[in-house]
Image (cartoon, rainbow, N blue to C red; front, side):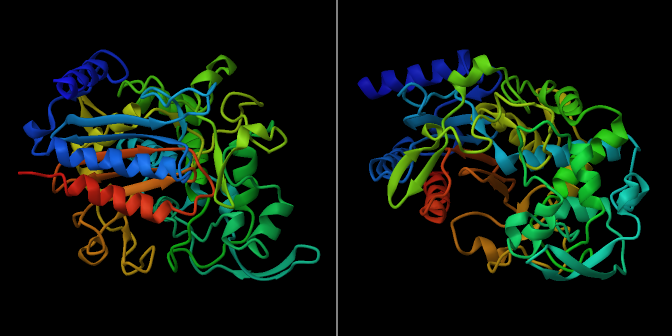
Amino acid sequence: MKKTLISLLLLLNISLGFSQDLKTAKPESAGFSTSRLERIDEFLNKHIENQWLPGAVAMVSRNSTIVYAKSFGKSGIAEQNMKMDDVFRLASMTKPIVTTAIMILVEKGKCLLDDPVSKYIPEFKNATILKDVNTSDSSYTTEKAKNYVTIRHLLTHSSGIGYSFTDPKKVGAVYGKAKIPDGANIDNVTIAEKMKALAALPLLHEPGEKWTYGLGIDMAGYLVEVLSGQSLSDFCEKEILQPLGMKDTHFYRDEKEENRVVHLYSDINGKMMDVMAFPQAKNIYFPTRGAKTYYSGGSGLSGTAADYMKFMQMILNGGQLNGIRILSRKSVEAMSNNQIDQLSINSRGTKFGLGFSLDTQESSYHKLGSPGRLAWGGLYNTTFWIDPKENIAVVLMTQIYPSTHQRELYDTFENLVYQALND
């Protein structure tokens, strides 16, 4: 009786509170087992007890219906328990949303995926490839690129643009000298200023030659500004966030909202440390303080798990949610299919679409998931996936970096969702 009452209260909280426009139902109505889903509780609580996680929020949807939504552990906010409507720094989970912004502009006829980026950002003309770097003074040599960077290259991380941490001694030296941020930033700079500078720097390899994770979506974010005449924030708010009812997802927030933003933690020698206790750490107060001028397309959003579920459900529904169409079905098909040909993003053979990793028969073999599964995650251990075959959308959010248990967290959590299917 007590368990039934708790379940009813949980559903009431979902339907009346943090996700009022997401349908909810008992797990059994969507082919899940309630008792098997409770294995997720045991798993996440164990991670928290072992100080591998500070806290977490997890949500599972099937057939457009939320069947599991729970919070665990502490948020770090005044020693409070984690709440379902707490706000997380999404980091690289920003990328699929900004990729969607580009696809909206494609649908509006503003650009084509295979257009050269230099058509819109002139600094990309006369692109070069980085050869050698003198780490003592950050000087370098280059050779002329044979191919030009396309918008598709930006969206698939095959442009040759990296991150400073891709190779700190080589790439870090070149990007560092030009003061290119690796992502979200509280300084008084703009994405236009820094992406123009990045566009003038050499590429790490020929466009389309390799898959190199990097600032390509930040460049795409600046491209949104060029093509739309709006800031990236304004465009995403108008075209994606507001139409989907993602009222708690933004690039920056009022300082009064700090009591909703989950604290960052670090795993230091097996001990969980609240990074907010070290105010000298750079960017620690993102997204509530600072200049609030740098709209990072690759890492700048913060929001709730329920909001992100709305975005995932839109993709799973072929581009629409609650009767509001964001993208055409064909655009979602393009985003959901392999866009990197014979390249892979990891040793498992995972491919990449537009904004999402894409599991193949080979890569899905390692877990209980399905081929065709779309996914991505963020630096602070936020992750999601969309499974069109099973009509499932799942999001897990926490805030910890570095973490020595990330792979176990992600893979076991995914297995625990799939093992709970009971249809």
